[in-house]
Image 1 (tube, rainbow, N blue to C red):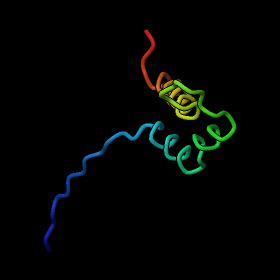
Image 2 (tube, rainbow, N blue to C red; image 1 turned 180 degrees about the horizontal axis):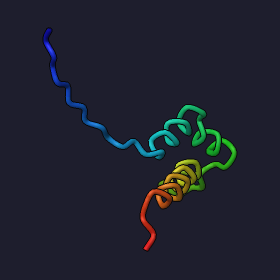
Image 3 (cartoon, helix red, strand yellow; image 1 turned 180 degrees about the vertical axis):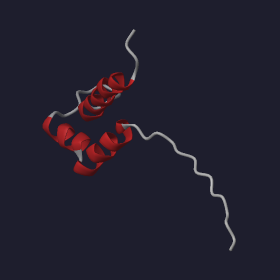
Image 4 (cartoon, rainbow, N blue to C red; image 1 turned 60 degrees about the horizontal axis):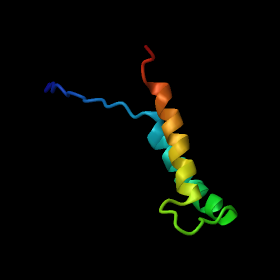
Length: 66
């Protein structure tokens, strides 16, 4: 009987990737951009800025508070 040892490497997948994927699937950025057109002169759309604020806010929950 051959017994082989298998080593596993685990990596932590935080919730940010999952939330970003869901936002992409439901078309959050596009929906917001349809409702709030980007004013001229802005480099970032309202939808993209909103998604960035959501992900940035969620990012603070994973850190240590001192």
